[in-house]
Amino acid sequence: MDRAQAYDERLPLPALAARVRTVWIQRTGPRPVLQRNLPTGGVELQCPIGATPRLVGPLTRATAEILPPGLTIVGARFWPGAASPLLGVPADELVDQIVPFDDVRNEASDLSAQLADAPRPNAALQVLQLDLLRRQARMPPPDSLVAEAVCRLMPWRSTGIGLLTEDLAISESQLRRRFLAEVGIGPKTLQRTLRFQGYLALAQATRHGSLVADLAAEVGYADQAHLSRECVRLTGLTPRELLGDAVDRCGCGHDHAASYGPFLAARPRAALTG
Image (tube, rainbow, N blue to C red; front, side, top):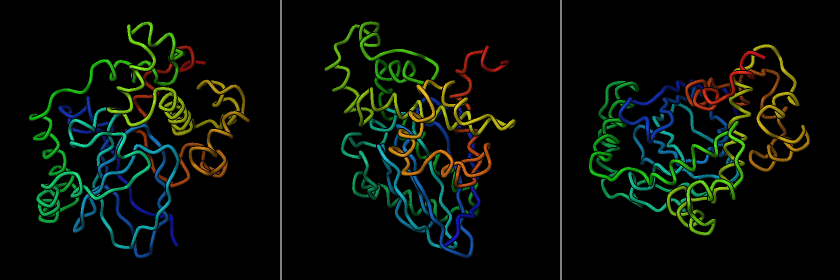
């Protein structure tokens, strides 16, 4: 078993930025690879070249799988609540599931054939994004209230669910129903997931060896024990096990700067200069 693999993550085409958080190309080497999918709050569309595309998540806990050697995957990671209208499946039906895209969209086989015909991985990633653009042109925009609520639940925006519903002029039960349909999970669960993503963004960006406790406090955890409990709940690993010895990389060894950039962009200026 090997954990080494090539992973190139980047921002999506600008026209997809409201729905897609990041796109990527992933390639395994000559040996099988242990892959750990972490909760992000959103859905992922993963397209192995030469095989059926699949939908992942939204996850409430990490899933581990073995990727075969010599595999190339292009994929898109959606913002919470942005995938459901585009992909044609209620988000709550996908929670903690990995399902073939063919099961929810009959034309997925056409996408698979187009990806297989692409001469290079970069071309395949372009094919995937152009396919998403065509789907987007036929679909209504995401639920604006849910999108605003997701923005307010990002790290460094200390809002409670009660205050959030008051600001949005909606009851907690109504907000939860709309979240389950569009995001797949409730607002409180999403807030906890996004807070952990904020912690991973800090760990990714830190170059001076900040203590885990310092990072935990900045993103809103009560203490290191609180972070450790959440990390184990979401990933099955402690922060030290997940991050390893390299503070600037997650345990899989990937650079996630493109994906975590939006979390850091919302970081208070005082924290950036402190």
